[in-house]
Image (cartoon, rainbow, N blue to C red; front, side, top):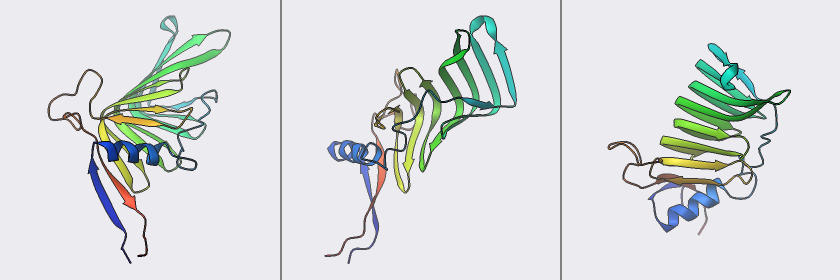
Length: 182
């Protein structure tokens, strides 16, 4: 009997296949998939500044945003909205220790852009995706909330600063291997 072990891999064909299977596979693995981007967006922060003329809200101080079970935390966020007789949030830009959680999935990075209209979240800088004991690290990840597919690469948009995680253009990860009998 083979004991539970871990497979450490770096970019290449296996990594791409494993990333798709692990982070964009069939339910229930697609925790980020099928997210309701039309649900209300709830904010909690140390400070909230409404900039009506610019159609934005600036939040700072341990910011927490929640939408239909998706929780976004960071030090600072800017929320862009349209006032069409009611407030419609279009985009959330987050910076400073960004963490996104839904169910058992976690994505983290330095900066995030949540485009509610396109249903995409882009994280840049020291990005890590975690699902149970499975982990992927790189420079940038794009999470498609409609499909649940997460695409991760080793570079940040415009390139990474030297010495940052993923600056060599590679993705690394660890995947749990199920117990098997011979």
